[in-house]
Image (cartoon, rainbow, N blue to C red):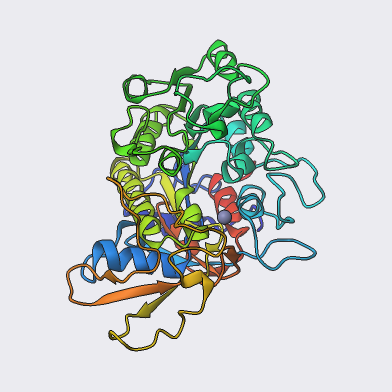
Length: 437
Ligand SMILES: [Zn+2]
């Protein structure tokens, strides 16, 4: 996308989008809101049917769910720049947003040939903006790493953590403290199971603190964060721990901080930078639930995405210079919404492994328990809120699928997302908003 644009057209569009007359309008080369901030919120694996199911189950037919109530919407394709595959992984999907190029699967923030290229987070830093990465799971996951710590392999989690500190990303909130502490050091959250043991090779938390980061590991230390640099390793794969720890309930875990609280704190800290901020948020639980064919927890993760959107749209009321983009890197599970058949009628899809309450790779249900315990329903039936109707879901694969994904947006240049675009378009719109680099 060219870097030079028609000033009057763009100015009118921005003013219309935010219902404000903006100070820069009319001048020849400064036709955007001054110091626009950008938030990208990814519901990992959140395809059109997921968004629809979340709508039906939790919001019904009268009230539009917050992420779909944003004023502009369109679709993004998800195909990677891969010589072999038609379906993307999260690393290539996020890299398309981060650098504006289609890359092979597994590529995390690097160019198609593994070369270093500036990411949106790099460009934000160059503009003097504050930067933040927030996840409801490990903060070192591929989606956020594609922006803040490009690596040749998405599994290099310790290198990703170190890379965040090398870059000086201001706000780092999520889980996965085991990558930040050296082997043998359990960190601040008690270890539970072998999977939870530290895997690092140096104390990156100590390094962060000496670099000027405040550090939080539970609710009180989290609430005390003021920035401008803050590291919170609080989630620690909280929801998934419930599959490993008998009786674990994340809602009463003192180390667990709800995703929407992570987001409001991130806005509080990042919003103090007069040059604006760039924030990437991921709901990783949504993708895990899709892989596990766990529709009920997928929809609850969707509620958490909506709660994050609510926090952001509330913030936008006083900060119309903030562009919010809500989308997904891909769909997960090949999920569809179906009618519930009458009792006794043969279930046409009952021979499909994906539709079984026990996945083909296990002998017992492996779902995360629901809050308060209990095995969630993988496929339903689920009520449509406020009605007597029910739906069920069907799954076609435990992997990702190649469908287009919805994108909704609010704020300056949000109207650009109307229509169907490649996923690299996220980069194009953000760089357009920021102007010449
Ligand atoms: Zn996935």
